[in-house]
Image 1 (cartoon, one colour):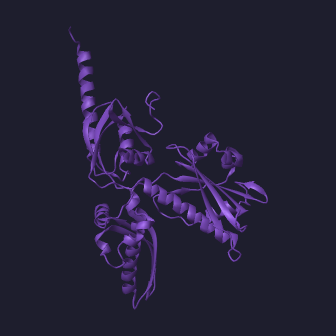
Image 2 (tube, helix red, strand yellow):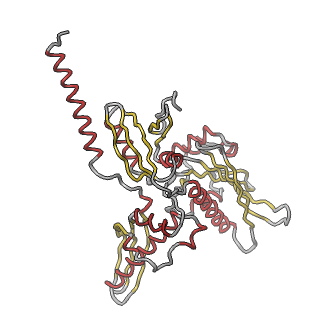
Image 3 (cartoon, rainbow, N blue to C red):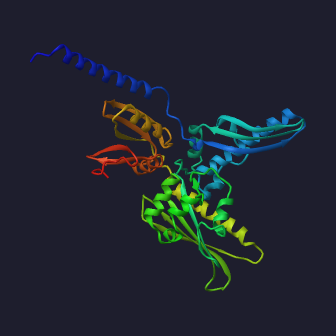
Length: 381
């Protein structure tokens, strides 16, 4: 069969386009190492030091700030039950673990220095230290958990109303940079029209999911607080029923009960209760995502694509997954990218970590396939 000049030109152009696509894809992939997740960065550490002179105050403040940031980092990664195993303050040269730091809100006098520090730490030495100390740790940061504080009082069951003291307590909680991110609703017109208090109390999954999507949250926690009496002692108490709605498992309800003493204002008790609930969320997440350090795992994964932008989007999300140590490209084509993910933790832990970056790793025909969340073909879900 004879091929015309036009057909030959079209075939050559197609091969040339394919070649350019693959070369470009390779260059983009090799342009730089994957960025570490910001789990190893501690932000907003305040320092305030007075010394004999300004230079001494600044040097001491920066040293103290880095020490405090390192303590916060280790507590972020580890369980409360292992806090006693952490290094004593001053027992380590913290600067050996520091990658870099930034200073903001800097103020100084002749003898005093004030500022806020953001400190980034080197991931590998920190991991090595914890392994050498025999301390278990987690690295995966969760998607935000949307908290819906419901309060039952004399005015009835409240969610969006200003009289909801339980919601006020949550809004007063200082922002903390743990592995679990907390999202609180704005209680604006969109929230009020989208979710009635009875939807929250009854666990209306469609309404709860819709609100969670608005805040780009993963799970939703309906936290129902009320004052009642202990059936045995008859004393007043704050009873909190926390029901967590998750796409990963069936709803789970847990109770938190705190006695209400005469010498503690209700507002103070509620602030303690908020810390208790948030701390439980943090510890549960760490327990579920503790890393197994019996070696590095390798998972061969196929990423379906229809354009270069598809791959760039997936690549960017992979860079935020801390349990992934290396990503090695094996094959590139116009419709798929094959990669090897070198990671710690088993496949189920990798799936959980990927899910927090809105990536879904599913099993298809004895191989792993990676999709952006929400784009899994119906026949594969």
